[in-house]
Length: 498
Image 1 (cartoon, rainbow, N blue to C red):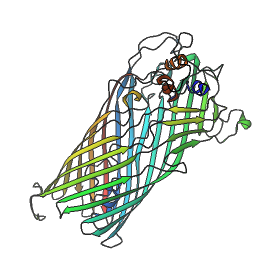
Image 2: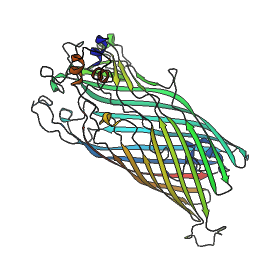
Image 3: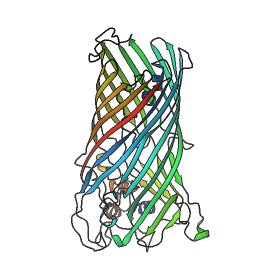
Image 4: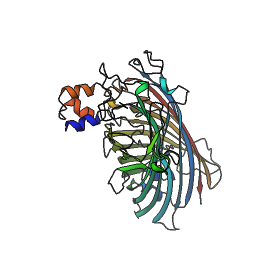
């Protein structure tokens, strides 16, 4: 057992963060678990039967990440090639994550059945700390993330049924392809690769530029899942209630999606397996040539449950086309609750034994259930529908394991949306908003290389807190510091009624 702890002590943090689904599956607040808008399919598959007819939707948008990470502790001597110690420069957060969705609904010319097909990017992360030009030898985030370009493309085949005039049911089969390309650094003893590596002690300092290993990862996999939901019209044309469940993606390993990759060249063809496709892992020590091989990163998507309500207050029973369009026909109050439950709290990273020893590492995330709530107001005019919505969500991970590769905290979002009828069958969709991320003062404090020495002092007893932390992958350079992050976002789209 002591040997197992020793081999796990130098484990790195991978650059792929927990696959957070977008704060809203559709960046359009006129869609929700009880709405008939086609974007609502991503909340509740029963929604495609709320409105009769056939529709086509195209929508795209961007989320801008603006902020910085200021490391609290100084950089040690030897962190950069010049060997000098000193305060860390702020790591700038400057990147843009795109978001897109396309959907089609067909009612089969019936009053009871609607079929739907949709594609979306619920997970998109283009984290890149190189974007401001700061060199890696000065980058304080490098042991957690240098860059991370990951995405998840989901498709859904849905059916909505009207069982009663007041009861709608829906279900969908979901499939998703997830891919990640990332880079991070780790400390290591490149001369004695089976040793503990650095532990922060006097004779084994960490974060040494001359003792670095650079890890690049390019892996992907396909998974599948399902969604189910119901909408009840509790008061005719006044009150709607919705409930839905979205499963994680599954594979032949259950609710774990193993992202995998392998180079196209074999090592005995070119000596390194790095001349062909770079899929898998690429690892280099110091300035040496890289070694390439197969890699696997296990991720898991969460269980998601929605409960929503929508209450309408008619202001004008009937408004003719000649009526004053500045007077709203109706107002609506809308709200939904979301519970996100992770299937697994942590991840594992594995590479070929010829690249690293040991070959299996823990990836600490400490994912936990999160709760989100919204409150919105909508105004319906003759040709325009306006919506305003406030959203709050609790953190999805423990504060201590927040890092530059795992940005998360309390989230507060304010968004505005507009639907404008351009022609009889064509509508323009616009949405703008901003999210504020509020981080805990304890963010990143769980990471500590000196846990290795504490575990050694405990005789490698895996029941002690220090050895447990080492096994969970926390014995790596600190991520403690001051995090600031704001996320402005916007989207535009077209809705076509066939």
